[in-house]
Length: 605
Image (cartoon, rainbow, N blue to C red; front, side, top):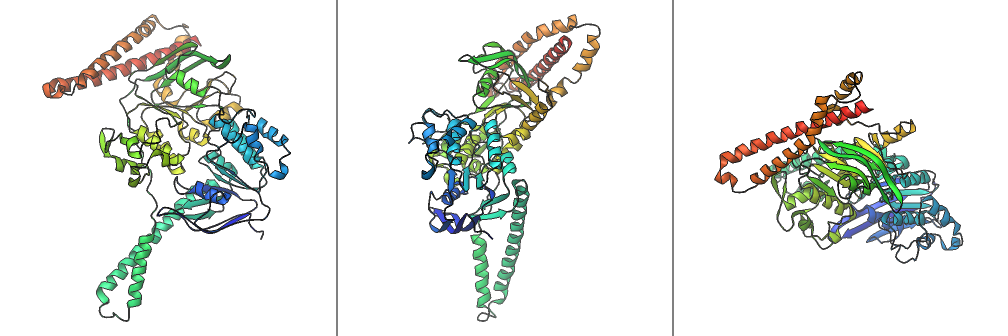
């Protein structure tokens, strides 16, 4: 059997009093394709740095096969010591190959890098691509990649996937991107409570195997508890009669108790819930013929979109094509060059910016979540901030930990925790999956599936899009923005089949206007326009909706008077019921407006 490229033996590492790695042993072979998995905070990045030789363990041995080259991609690359990105990439070549600068040109083209740009002016995505090129250029025997798909668009992710599929050496990946891991890995390393377990199978098998391991642990713990109980009963009932003869058995009892006490329990699951606001109108966004250009380049043109309550829309495309601009135009943050955007009524918009601009380095976890209070309110219920922290896998002792001391994954979890406490009925998410571990990502998907409001998100995570969205707006950089039914895989299938075009009608929309098509066909035999009665109704509905919305706002303002219930409880109750009735009336009018618009479009087509 051939020797491994790299081995770790009896590795121990602690942060303060907390052990991170305990007597860890692992080996990496010549052709291993490994993914390193585990929750945020378990030490995955730290272990990768030990493997790369960048940090030393407290004790233990790291052995590398003589002559083997190891290259490492950090989560947050630092190119500040270089004048240009070209120089930064060139620095990845071994000294004896430094004259082969042409290899930089190849990767610069493949990864669409502005080689003469300074690192200071480069975006996060461009710096990440340059760091990838620097890591790959030396063609190492062992490639160590920490979250390689972060800040990359889908086009580059798929390029990297194909490149690594043909890689001749060994590799180890830390990633939350399921599609990426499923495509590339042949074995899984699970870092859990200081130890590494190995599964010689691809990522597709990992989660089922993980459940099997945890279930086996539960069974072993039950057996140990039962044995302790039996030995304790014996110690009470029989030790006095056999004190001398059975001291060995008593020592065994103490040893069992110590073993149980020393067992590190598996951390609980993340428990996420979202504060939900009042019901929005049936129509959330209606965009007609919108276009936007910057510096003479058209980002999108003549784009139409209708978003109904409950829709989950994903925006997909390479970096720089205008996804964020489209998002801002659809939500009224900026004005389109042409066309109109109408926002629906009673919208409580919650926008989560993944640049983490809301997180100040000096703020503590508690301050971010509760603003100096001891309580967090979500869905009308008060929860102590330390209890709420546990829902998001923060230890209570971290309440006074500053943001600057948190990992990237912990910061993202904190951002979700702070924002999800706020009431909303319209979620806008920009790259929500960055740095999240698998468990948190799974639960985020479940929460979004149960969310009663509307979701508009930008993501490059193909698996996440497939699991969450009902339709996808795809921007390919040619000035088009096209809506497809389903997630990313559905878009690829439809495009491959030549079904390019606005072919989407989500389930929610279909349910609302299921009878419109048949009605339109019947009417179209006689006329290509709405009846006089329907046209008059359609003309009057916008003003009626606006007037009703203003009436509801006035009533809500009156109801918000804190003294109203004390002064006049009968009026308070009557007003509450009247508001609900008016909201139902508004929903009915908006739905009728939607039906008539759909009917009109069907007739005109």
